[in-house]
Image (cartoon, rainbow, N blue to C red; front, side, top):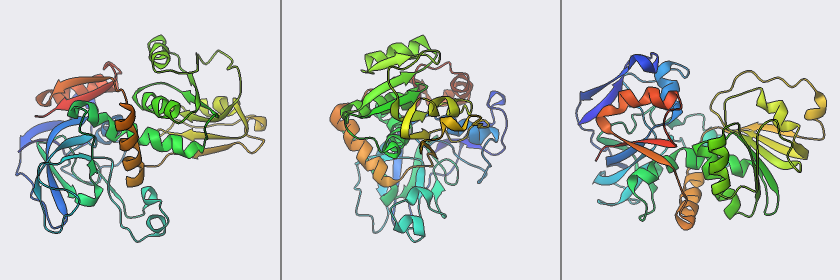
Amino acid sequence: MKAWILERQARIENKPIRLEEIPTPEPSDGEIRIKVHACGICRTDIHVAEGDLPLKKSPLILGHEVVGIVDKVGKDVTSFQLGDRAGVAWLNHACGECEFCLSGMENLCTGASFTGWDADGGYAEYTVLDGDFAYHVPDHLAFEELAPLLCPGIAGYRSLKLTETKKGQKVGLYGFGPTASCVLQVAKHSGLEVFVVTRSQKNRDAARELGADWIGTYEDNPPTPFDAGIIFPPAGNLVEFALSQLKGNGRLILAPVYMTPIEINDYNNIWLERSVKSLAHISRQDGREFLQIAGEIHLKTQIEVFPFDQLADILPLVKGGKVEGNAVIKIV
């Protein structure tokens, strides 16, 4: 099969990945093989390629927004059959035995492995994984539309769950890219009031089209304090700013995988039992819940689709913010 291989980390502009012909993987007992039709490009892939995250496996196939068709099933697999549509997300495996797994928090599993980091991902014609960690995906969406749901969609959904907001409450979204657009749609479906804070006029227009209740810049004063907030950019300087806009007992969720230094200089901005919590990975339950909701509400995603063999040239465009919405590689 053809696959994009990373062996050594380097700036993405220097094209550290290369397209090679390698043996097609075979599923072991309990595993399925997926003929990959599309794979979304995530900034986490760039963080791994460039060394912001340590290289855990070499050679490595990146990509963790994977969708395709099951074309081979290993022994003892009961959750998938040949021909099923399937998706693969960031969480590739969890031990099922540690304190986190046993308490319903497998996203914090001490023995977890992650797609496109510990295990080969979807920038390839085929991928294999434990059938229990793959997802059934909605039938009525094209593979290219589905791919982004497997990362920004599920991760955004978990960040919204972490706010613990209830119908009628107010949530502020700081920054408005692909993940926030998914959160906005699910939040409105859940009966929340959604306030979007972003510098970009284009993103403000997108938030308005998706039904945000209030949209402003960082210089504007929201009409009311929020019950919770979610920060999407990796900008630590936004933490104190967002805290200052929360009610007492407000919850602030940090959604990025890394963040620039955080400083809270005025204790009053975190006083009144306001709290800060980071998002860490996803669980399978998050994925199942989100994909069901996404199918029910026909969740909208903005995508730009590129040929598989252009991946090395597209990654720098994604890094530079030169792609409209979610970049997706079409493999079949």
